[in-house]
Image (cartoon, rainbow, N blue to C red):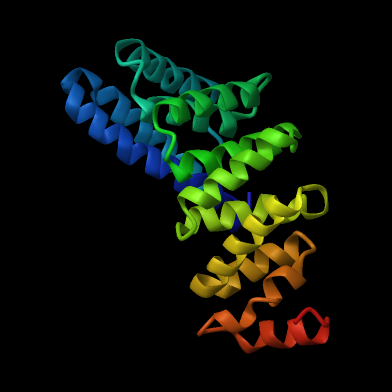
Length: 223
């Protein structure tokens, strides 16, 4: 797993971990295992080191036990979704979508969860109406969140030709916002997805751009 891909996975897990920490503090010492599980997820997600089945098993068991005690805790469902999406076993993508959907039922204004749902739908090969809705909701709720920008740029540009004009507009809006924040990151994503022109069209919004990217955009006629 490359550095960009690890970042796309690691950041939402770390954010979920922060929410789980608050939940554990609220619920008491009995939920300290939830925080420990979250730390474990964040560690091997950020490093790209795949966990063993035994490790995955106890993390899932601890989270599911916590959910049974506090079913309305959105952060716990979020972390279950991240776990399922990372492990990619049989039915894991469906599990992650169900967990993210439940988290959003409880906390519909979370841009990180909407972005995670985009990733889950894409991983399942489901890039239809619900995928586009998730893109639009992520863009609406977190247009200036770096993780949301890079996630929507990555998966949105991957299906650029297949989405509706309104969804394409939201993708480009987050590409533009990302270019203003970190042009090199968004240009790399755009190049990998074969959509360099979308990012190069917003090159002027960046105050700091490596000359190599300017030259590349100009040489390919993407600006």
